[in-house]
Length: 323
Image (cartoon, rainbow, N blue to C red; front, side):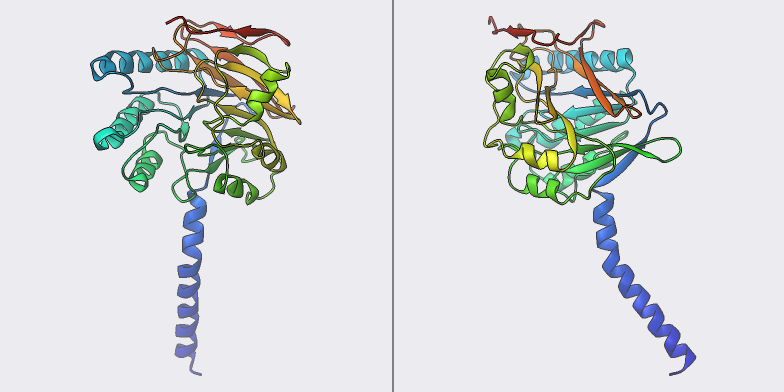
């Protein structure tokens, strides 16, 4: 074999390897991303949930959209987070194909925050073309969304300025039915991590109902947890994946937490101005603080007036909407 032929064969083999390896590398890049944090022992995450832009009557859209955006900007200003996480129901369905335009509006509001942000899909976040919506989410200013090639599921590594992995955040698309089926399969396929993991998703687990019913939860209850078709089996999968805390949304009138089998289950504070639940408690967000040295996760509910709240152990309030 001549030298030239040998070189050609080697080049051909290299090109074949690249062709085979590239799709896997591309897929990986859309399942995982990273964020460098400057204060590893005080990582601040602001969870927002259930913004519901464009919900209710069209005549109210301008007012409530503007009020909601004003509220979340104020929350960012007050809490100065390293990361904003939005756990679903950002817009309202896809009537007459309007979902994508509503998503584009929401993306413009997130860009105005000028803070890195991540997103999980909610049951009301509907569009005609999911692939296009995934691309819009991924390429939006400030976005860390990487769910395009993994059904809306992805991970985010929080790393120190020196590149040390500190925490890993999991973002799970619970669809309309909850954390079942292929979402659990995705969790099972995650490689082990030597750092604690925190999960964010929209629809709660069945155990969110259990912890209130058995008296172990503390906080505010305003409606029965709506865990859809989740049968309680997802918790074991999350535990096996190394998840120590879960943050969800979906039920606007609940803001409580409890621990099951070593995993803390926490409701986010609904963030939309107006909407159902408006008479139960003030709308706001959840400020989560991660301490890398101690491997602890703590949180408080925050409101745009600067107040913070976390229930005392055993503090339980039952509230209902008055109108």
